[in-house]
Length: 70
Image (cartoon, rainbow, N blue to C red; front, top):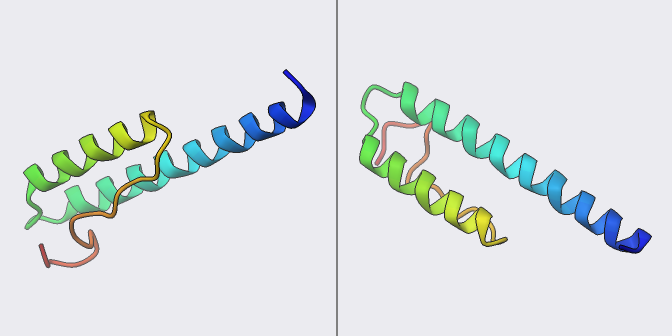
């Protein structure tokens, strides 16, 4: 592995960790909302995990976890 490849892999790992941390924060906020639809939360977490495992971006959340709108 060349030095540029190592830097690229390090950057990808950093981005993955950031995406996972953001996803975790979203899920915590969503689950703390008593009106939250847990099915939507589970479906989004599943889709996000699949996208991240495939190297893609996290899909947009189905609703804003900070609001009561679903």
